[in-house]
Length: 318
Image (cartoon, rainbow, N blue to C red; front, side, top):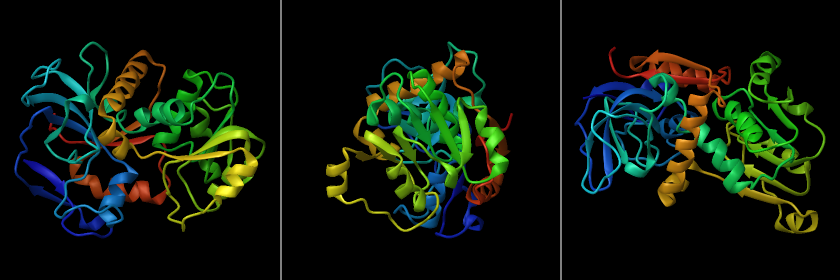
């Protein structure tokens, strides 16, 4: 089958379109004929060698397509069924066939959902619900601050906060050009990152660096900050435990890959919630498609910090 591989760690130019062995599903797994694969910052970390993966490696943490084959013990799915799926545990989505745990697969044959949109949901939309509901434990009326509000996951966090009953929801962006794009995704206000002010019950930070320290300072008493990325590439920011004690604040981490490996059923439920939200129109995603062969271009655009919404790679030839 065709697949994009990482033969060596490096810049986007190392990505290569190869012919590789088609995977088969094992017990509890599903093989999917991939229509689209989402492009994410996580795959850049694989490519750069920041995340330790064996080479050559097929990246790709989310896909849409149709069920190709069921492994032993799989129930509730059928061959040919249209699905969205998280392939984040073992990766492999930038390929014509991907294999993942059945618990991480969400059918959408009962919905009017385009495959390109379906591929944009498993990572970002699932993460948004899990971060706010499971990790931050949002309560009705609470205030929320989200960094990188115009990006793939940022565009979903604002909307998910609304659906979960948040009060004031504010987003930050890195440039003025992104402010209007972010406003369309459920935010009461969008400001430049360095201009964020006020007090918030919940702050979600995937940027890191100076934004992480300032985010902690913006927390209200009993506020919760969720750390879920370091897009700035800055050195780690430490927050002393005694400061947590004295300020009545909490800092938590969320990593979708680790969560999906440890709690696949819960991750799958959040994915199905995201699929239903997108099909009903409660969750909006701005999606742009590129051919699989342009995976390197997708990576460069994500790394540039100039993207808004979601990039997906068209894998199947329509």
